[in-house]
Length: 262
Image (tube, helix red, strand yellow):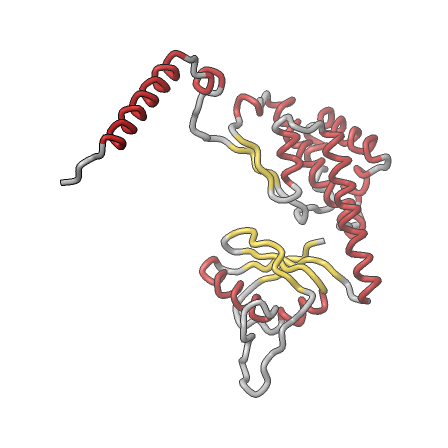
């Protein structure tokens, strides 16, 4: 049996007294957490997409069905950006809409436009009906607008500037290296994702010793390409030199499908 020294016993007694007095004080104070911020389970979320989902005419059906609300949002977009982005969204061409400095604000604006249609035409109240707003990449800006943290015009300016900087970085790198840069999404069956990711990393030289389908002719590591995102259980995104991405893709021994991203 262990015995306690008088010093330890006294220390424990004082500790109990302190804990007891703290508990009494805590009971005497109002609990603001409960009264001001009641906890509740999260049931409903609004989730907004990132860029890459854009297509010419993506707002046309909404404009035809709900012209008042849709036109109001698109006019605000045009006035904020200082040019007719709405014409690019409606009429294209694809090559112009797919430029990242156009596609990013276009996707965000149409996302907010659809939300405003739900609110104005159907009485949907996001603040009372939604527990959380989420966005994938670019979609985070739409989510911040939906949550009331950003004004639409401010978010639009940020997104446009963000996209311009991304485009300029790509152009600068292309001029310096003489190569074309971009992003490519790879889709596969969920059960193949780990193998696909591991194989890609080996090709990129991130995991030794690399792929040796032929021990006498090992495939060298492929530089200037990175795994930019693991989007979901069946999709990853590669970023870097498009020529080198193509070199990697033709050597992948696993089933996959390519989606081009601007």
